[in-house]
Length: 159
Ligand code: ADP
Image (cartoon, rainbow, N blue to C red; front, side):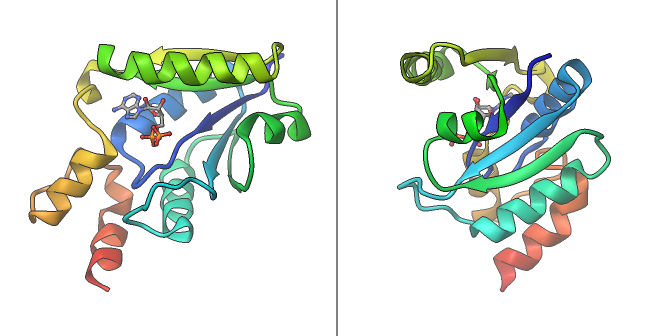
């Protein structure tokens, strides 16, 4: 049985991310969500806020755990005995970057496999950056992010 991880910056977690997590948990039993702490990317939400929103959004799904990791994802995977990386694919424009990432990880450890789940068409246009833009311009994010975190997002942005 494979043990899988789903990694990303989740800035913030969206309905598209949640759909991938629910489908991965249904198929693979256990999913460890991994948020890297050492990415150069400047995030709109702090690591603690992003972890809290992921935890709240996934509390109803059995077998899901959430962790932040300082270092390479594949090294962390070796520590916890995981061998499968789940990624979501929305469009051809995702593909180049995803293929490069999967190839680098396979070069580092050839027994680690990347599996792509196609985006649910309902959420194929949803991204964290679109959500951040909507928030910035005061747009309605209902349906773009899990309903249970909308209050938290407003709180984090307001203060
Ligand atoms: P990163 O900054 O590492 O790209 P993201 O949080 O943006 O992290 O995304 C994590 C993963 O989720 C990536 O594989 C991305 O393609 C996928 N993903 C993002 N949005 C969606 C969506 N709406 N539907 C399906 N997969 C998605």
